[in-house]
Length: 202
Length: 202
DNA sequence: CAACATTAATGAACGGCGTTCAATACCGTG
DNA sequence: CACGGTATTGAACGCCGTTCATTAATGTTG
Image 1: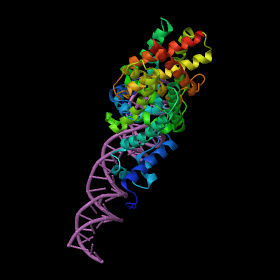
Image 2: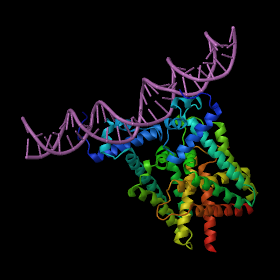
Image 3: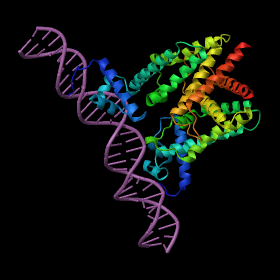
Image 4: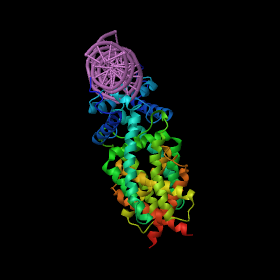
């Protein structure tokens, strides 16, 4: 039998998450299995079910970690500068993580809960954070807009940023001459935000 | 043994695609299997490999069909009106299909080829079509822009439209009060396009 | 009409998957 | 040192996509 109590349950959880992250980054979003993860740790598959309720749960924990990294970058970008510059910096950080850790990023956005199980609160909180940071910047950018309008703008803007990064990461841009995603993000933010500002002045 | 030659190979292919479509719409994007498809047709799993090279190939054929439906709607929307109205109509058609045939739409955009196999030309053509239609409208909307600029705009715009529809379809908008995707598409097109036009005038 | 060649379809097998759970081997405690 | 508790196992279940030799129905020929 394998060594006992070499690691606490928490340590083992962290190790399992790390093993999955490694596997995903090395082999791609859809090329891992409970058996491989356990193998990497030197345990049997069944053991993982004492750490997580199932594979979905483990994936969710890894995704939370990835979202934390994403949020950290976004928060850093929120530091200083006018809203336009900050939002651009945020969008570029979003793209950068998608680029540098493509598979982890894909896992966050391509994972669907089995049998429509509800996403836990501690997970939803992390996705909400991003939208909130965008809204904060919009408060400065279009002070005349009410909260409702800002909500629409934040979701529109960030949904768009996400779409652009997604097309890039999934290689759907090779159709008829590729365009750098940076140019697309610039185009989006320049035009969308400047028009929003103009309307706010009226 | 099952009846022979009741159907031509082409008929069987169409039936298999239809069976998969049915299964996907009924049970969701990730709840089908070769065995279920064959079962629906009254055949054994192995038989499907005389019609398609593998499951990926079958999925690709269904996705091509879905893209054809999408393109048909987009072409219809391209009929008449000023570019802004036409592009809005196109975006709304995009959203409408995502709404009415969510699972089929998801299958198109969530399917990844195994072992990074190349996507066949006949498939790429269908995805290119959409971007081209957007570019045609932009030619009218911003006549001053050169082809390169229009390419960037078309991809930026359609990547954004896609991102917004995706967030809606995947239920990622429940975070802190939902916003109707129609409002987001309106916001995107109004602001992005109007700013593009203004720049074109300079 | 019988014998044959062709081919549509089968069904069993392979190696893999996520998940469950009784049995087991180890550990700290008394 | 024995014992109770528990961390870990390993076998099993019912799935999965895919392959392929075998079979059975067909169309063709003599």
